[in-house]
Amino acid sequence: MEKNTYNKKANVVLILLSFVITLTVAALAYAKLHIYPGGKYTLLTYDLANQYLPFICSLRYVGTGDCSLFFSMFGGLGTNYIANIAYYMANPINWRTVLVPREQIPDSM
Image (cartoon, rainbow, N blue to C red; front, side, top):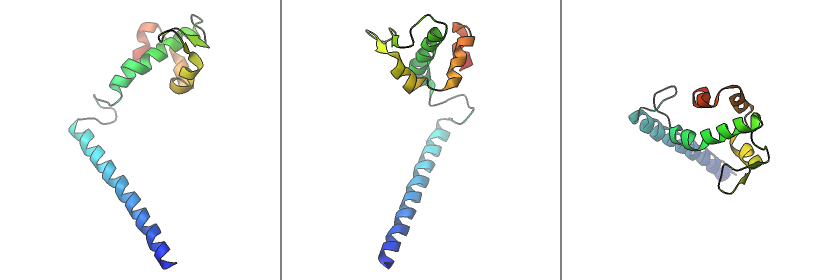
């Protein structure tokens, strides 16, 4: 029974140690790159501009009635739009893009 307790304590210590080491390495890397909350640089720049923004723009077209909620021609030969909504745009705050002009969508995000 005593050996089992030692293994649980050792596991907890290893888990906490791995968390602290990972957090420290990430914090040092971000500090070196000048990445911090509210800063000039961010990790989401490329993904936001090249992947997320087109989906949000297409959501505006759906909201204004220019495109179908069920099928989208924005990707290749067409895609199931419900899957895109479920994966990228399920946040109800994203529907605010219907209220702003298309040119101002990046600023509203």
